[in-house]
Image (cartoon, rainbow, N blue to C red):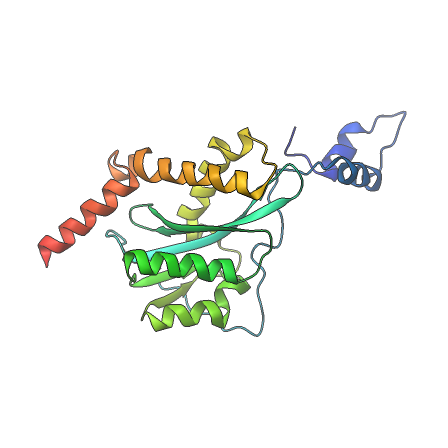
Length: 228
């Protein structure tokens, strides 16, 4: 039952004859290096002093590559502790354009992923994020402004505004992460490189008419070029 946290374990282990306290369970889990696979809090902390930008996608039809990019941060459970993963996705084609790992929730690895995507694929029209402090920071938004990208941000607590990234995380975790145990960041990075390559190149999506993200992205660019 890897989804159980200290509270659930305490309730599960308590019997009419023996009360098991949450504090004891939490201490023993820490000693044994056990962590729940439930989402960890804090990957999207807002900084009140940072400016927040309006949500630009309401009612917008998103049907071509590089029209809208989106990003998010999730955690990856390790044998001991966890790491953070950011991915940048093309909304229309689901293609993962860049990703980075970090053992801290700083802004640097987010900016590195953003710059990689921009230099490899050019600038999108709109870039959508949540209101996490990494994305509202000057270091992150200044890069988007320098590339003349319009900034869009989800409403507070509205994870469905960035639903395709949420689906990516679910797919990644259930198809790969939860099936393994990673001892080091190097091991995790190598496995993610393999999985993201497979996801972009070979995983067909029903919403893309059974195309892979790479196929949908390339075909979309080709159609745009012909139309121009």
